Length: 626
Image (cartoon, rainbow, N blue to C red; front, side, top):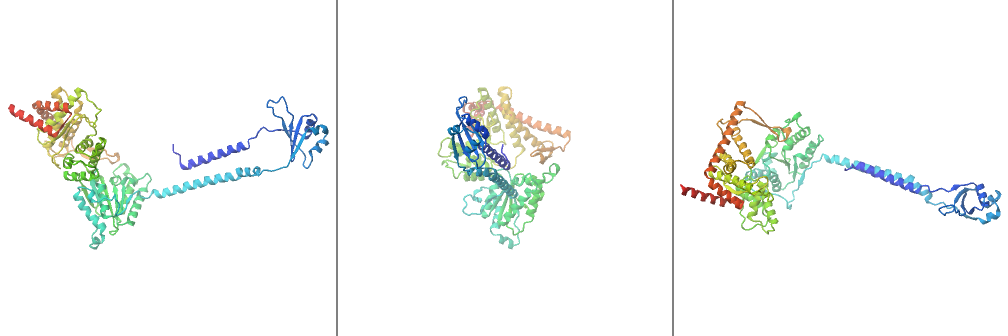
């Protein structure tokens, strides 16, 4: 358990006091005190021949008796006595009746009184000065902690933004060349860069540059990269902060940090403020229980005020990024604040090729690297995904002690990013391996036998991630829109594995659970969202996001129970039809199914070329039989 600094110092001082107390105890621990006798008793002891030696020091008389055989320690007994001041001890004893002959046998010595300096200095130090020193140290420590705490309180309201300077020699500076693709977005932002470089040109024409630029796009498409590229091109200070860094548990801290951030940016103008994950503070106000989080809403209000209070010649531009533009407060999106919205789409096949080249610049590549093939195998990948593919390829090559990264490393990296690493320790039994082979063969056979499906790139029964096997299909063309025929073909392909299992083994296994989940989800969207059923072009159900429950999305029914029954029947009809179609294909092409499955059992993996060869040979055999 970590102690508070003040408590820790207090414990430290208490320990010091205990130590000092222990020293006092050791110094002043009383030893065995000698007995105190009177002068008369001393006279009697001398007369009885019991006294051996007398030491006189001032008025103190120390008596050492003769050896006592009964004493187990073997040491002579001692005693103390006091005499009158300015008196001579022998005379005093004689007057009291001591025997002079016996007195002469006693050794009498006198010592000058010498008072030690430490006799008064040590008590003065221990009892007077040392406590003052300890108290002063304790007070100084407390004042130091209080001063540090006060400084932290003042720093608490300061912005946490990371500042990237406008140093032209900065090696980490990012420009538009480092962000492949995004042509339309770059064109929009070029105007922002030109304004930051030459603001007088626009101000002379009475033009107002957009005060806020909102970058919208899915995760990993390059929103933050593009914002830093704008700062690099314009060569101006770049203040980067995440939306969540504004909000604290104390009310008012977020708005104070917003004020500090904008004030700092104005002093460094021309400059750029970049707020990443704007949805953390820019959510629609009043959407949660009790009107939302007060601190978050106060922070949002301060951002609205600061953006609306900009002067046209301030030279500060606010850029923000989010992948949830649908939940932002409308006040943020009105003209005068974030009045320019730039949509960033996932890269197409040509952009993916350029992105791969950028992320592979510093890697030793083999001469036969074909980035076009890699980009064709990665539809839907974002820039971050492609950077991950290039890095995984380099890791795979290094793991195998290669000196260059080969094409096979990139292709293996794609599957690793998509499905996860190979689970070589997950060994299937002979029966399970056979079932998995027929299951994947069923997917591939149905997919290649009906129009509207994507070509099969690879079939494998090697476990990856949560999948016991997989059939990898890659789009030959990137279609932004899809038809009902394509969706039905996809559902039939998903049913192909289950149909093959039933045909060959008489029953299905749990391996088809994920296929059924995907097929049911797709069929429900066909009926309820896309209006591709006999119910007509109607969208059923209003979806609303429950802000106070995070990502929870609820659906409000806007249809009757009778319509709900029809929807269920339509979904069931789509799934039953796809199941029937898949069963017919695998039954009609059973020989082909067995050939693909046996090849899988033998080799565990079939690439596209070999699969097309098997299907081509099979077609010729079917034609010859006819």
